[in-house]
Image (cartoon, rainbow, N blue to C red):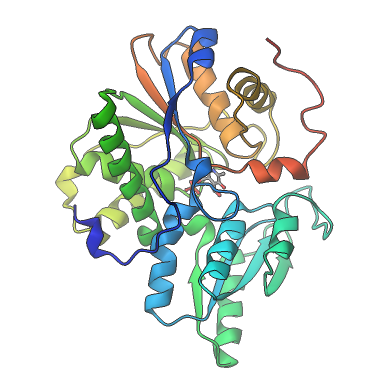
Amino acid sequence: MLLAKYPRRSYTHATTPIEKLPHLSKLLNGPSIYIKRDDLLGLAGGGNKTRKLEFLIADAIHQGADTIVTCGALQSNHCRLTLAAAVKEGLRCQLVLEEGVATPYDPDANGNNLLFKLLGAESIKVVPHGSDVIAEMHTLGEELATAGRKPYLIPIGGSNDLGSVGYVACAQEILQQTFETGLVLDDVVVASGSGGTQAGLIVGFTASSAPIKVHGINVSRPNETQILKITELVHQTASYLNISDNHLSTSVHCYDGYVGEGYTIPTQGMIEAVQMLARTEGILLDSVYTGKVMAGLIDLIRNGTFKKEDNVLFIHTGGSPSLYANHTLFNEDLFAL
Ligand SMILES: Cc1ncc(COP(=O)(O)O)c(C=O)c1O
């Protein structure tokens, strides 16, 4: 796969490290656990969207855009990073934010909300929970075009075929890193939300004939819809890259047992997992994505899905800036050494 032929901006200086988690591995008495530190990617605060934005923003620039429009939840990491990329490129950025089920917009909220203002979003449109945010974003795009601007719309989570190419590139990076260190990976565990991260990794590994199983831990949807969503995105991304379908026989693995009552709603497992990684390895996760994914990994180890001889890589997709919007969440100790 010649990814070099696709226009790309570069927002991170080097590859992100793969680190061994010796204390966590010992504590769980299961497989050897490694972490891919995509929380250390470039742009303000790091996280998985940076890889997608390298391709999406390059396309926006190629198309002559002057304004980036995107959408997400009130504490969207994707919106923070899209805004940061736009600032870096001298573009303007407008956001559409959807209120949560039980969380109305609080203009004074901390975390990503603070950063939207600090990074200078040109406008923030807040819509009630359940609104059609995609339609709202298109309306905004049309208004901007009517006003003579050149908007470029990025879908939720940056998860279209082009954005997913960022994680095809990440799969190549992981294969190169593990080749250099002699680490034979068996499994990757990653968040499965808007899907571009999981889909990109699946395409990247299968196109390189690397037998690494990608386990997606759902953060919002049940398996009935999530597996279909990821499968479609796998095929769209492969087709964008001209990879033939017979390279993509891999089935999609998703787990919906760790979402709890819904997207952004805390679970006991998430609290235990966030505290466990902080207190064993000194690494911060977040409550909406990586905390639930780590809860999934811990449970899959405890129930014997992963064996002692396996090498498992957890992808840290970022999100810790949102911790500061929720400072009472971790008052109760669910894990102590
Ligand atoms: C920190 C973090 N991790 C994981 C995800 C999920 O990634 P994806 O939307 O590609 O499934 C997101 C999406 O917003 C995120 O912000």
